[in-house]
Image (tube, rainbow, N blue to C red; front, side, top):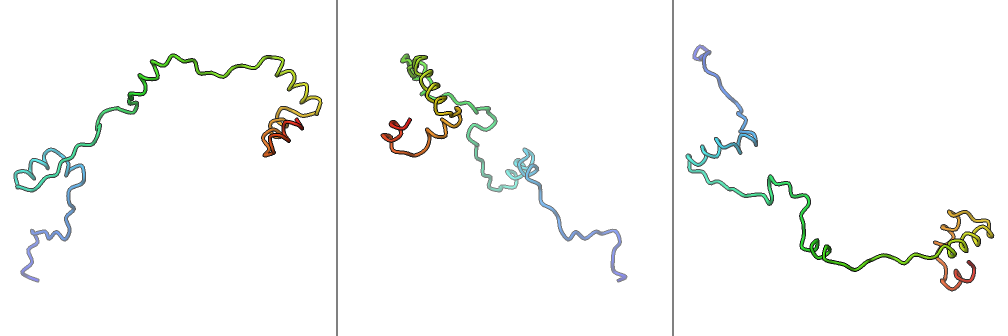
Length: 112
């Protein structure tokens, strides 16, 4: 016990560098000086705000001149549907649930 030196410190564990410290410019230069092998890779579009990438299809869509819309039905069709619905005592919601039931198309057209 008399041989112990009170001025020396024994380190049992030493933490390695954190990820940020290992990637710092100083750490990279020090590793190059020691002759260690370094691996570098560039991330695709790193540091660029490319959330909205314009594709080739955008220009094609801009050149499109054809009008794509559905033809509108006349007001008389809406009135006939409304009168038929009221004659049966159905609300708009009831008509929607009845019309979406899985039935034979011929039977649906005869009953409604």
